Length: 361
Image 1 (cartoon, rainbow, N blue to C red):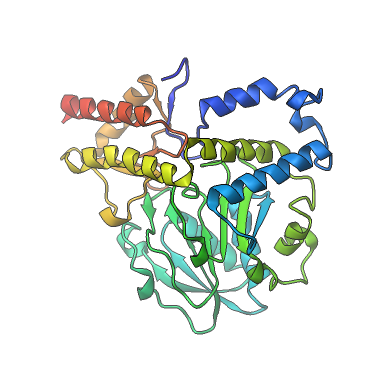
Image 2 (cartoon, rainbow, N blue to C red):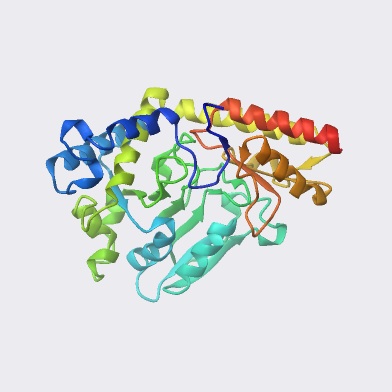
């Protein structure tokens, strides 16, 4: 633990690197000697436009994205995309194939159902979202115009490791795994991710979309709902969340300095292995997720004697291990170990878990 900072296992908004926070603190009142904070100036000012241009360049370098992809920074979170995707890319009275692989997939289906005909091409509800069929087993409707799913479900702690290989445009929510995995972007047509997991503060959503797909978006929408309009306005159709955009740029720079996505993936695997190995070797803790599909960002677990979970959480908090309570819809515990979390914090949690088991097992 550094100074008075706790071990922060929050699922989002999540912790950020201390060095990034300190850099933000140091320049918050006077950004690059302009005499103002970055959050006090117009998004049309050259200072902010330069920042936006630089952040996109860093992102393209970090993810190795060529000019066939458009990058858009939007507001409204991933939740807004649940509605914007079908109204932009499914023709009137058309159909979209949606896979239900966890809670966020279910939310996307519920929202999309309000504006289009949703075909459930696969659901893991029967096994309580602990195992997902291979993608070639999904039953895609002949009339579907797109396929949608969430790659990493934070609540259930499950991740689709397989790349898609469909004949339809593929739309994927990667809010909690983008920047933690080495993604083959050629396999995806539309990726979206909210910032508060792996690349900044809440209030910003990143979209990575193939330009060819974007050119086919519905033109008969109000501008604010038209994703293509946001692209044409360089993500400044209206006043953007300037602070979150600024912070995202800091994170892109930090990732490049740390060794890029390959290094982040390596760290994610190392950290998650510490916890999964402990859980699997224990008769006290349990992780229900199919081992081949476990999330490397959100490690969920329960105690066989669930009456001990309240005691576990209370003692963990007293030890500075914070925000480990599982989502209210599933209970148990959840350790979110995104890129900004240091290996030492995961080791502290593992040591606490071993000690708790010895005292209560």
